[in-house]
Length: 80
Image (cartoon, rainbow, N blue to C red; front, side):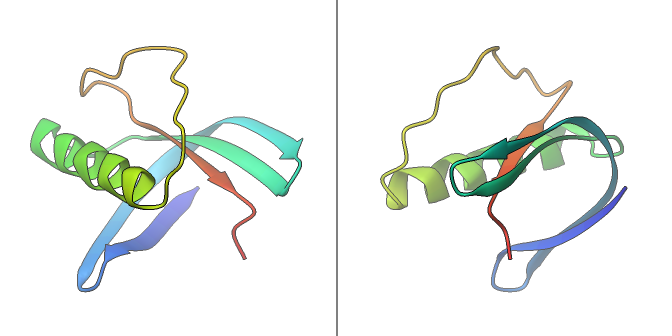
């Protein structure tokens, strides 16, 4: 799938992604995506921004695996 989203005002991520998992959650649909074309620097920046946003929103993150820049998974729940 084509993924385009704004992570911060003026900072847009645009990439091709493979859907790794789709499920229904308590808040709506949930998707796990693997972004295919980001380089290590961009992946690390995206991880940093995502973690910062989660902390700011008080979300508890549970990771099933450690991300080392090779694969970035994003859970998008109830987007709309």
